[in-house]
Image 1 (cartoon, rainbow, N blue to C red):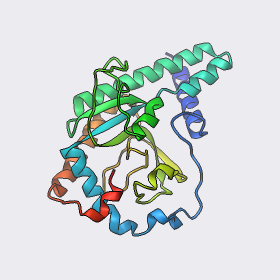
Image 2: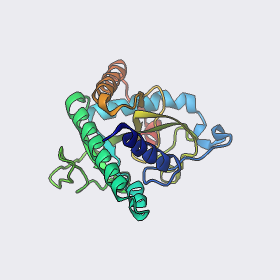
Image 3: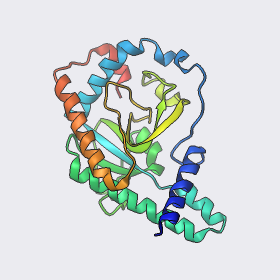
Image 4: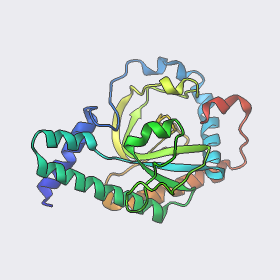
Length: 245
């Protein structure tokens, strides 16, 4: 595909995502976001929560990688009669997803990893993990089974100046991210309610080039291992269990 068309496909996907009309999420501006109750005791909690998360991920958890479908963008192009461009977006999406799956399978060994399409996000949120995972051909394969009780989500996407602090599990189903979208990252890590994690957990990996995605995954894997090594002896106290899910 010619460079100009490649750029146009990227711009279209980015436009629909940032405009909040793709299935991957919305972007809104937040006012005085740190007044939110989830920021109470934020600095005291975030270190303990991050240590608990990395230990659970390593010892009994899995990483679920969310793959984009760009279905809304593709459908809008088709409805507007731009069939050729819709086909190009489909192709680019497929190639990007193939590269992401290949990168994780080659460079990631911190914990088991599974892949699912974004249209199964609600199933992931509610721990309904049957018949949603895709294999290396990007086909949903019912034989892929995940019985992990704890998992985190990784995906390409924007990091936010988050409007959410440390959210309890009871409040997580109702939490809505209204922070300001910052730079798009190669990897952003979220909990199962798709709430962005916080430092000191290594919750993002900078970079965008799909050609270098293996390098980003390799560095992400290394940072997870380093953070775990420093905190592997941590024992989660009962009082923070409501924040680790």
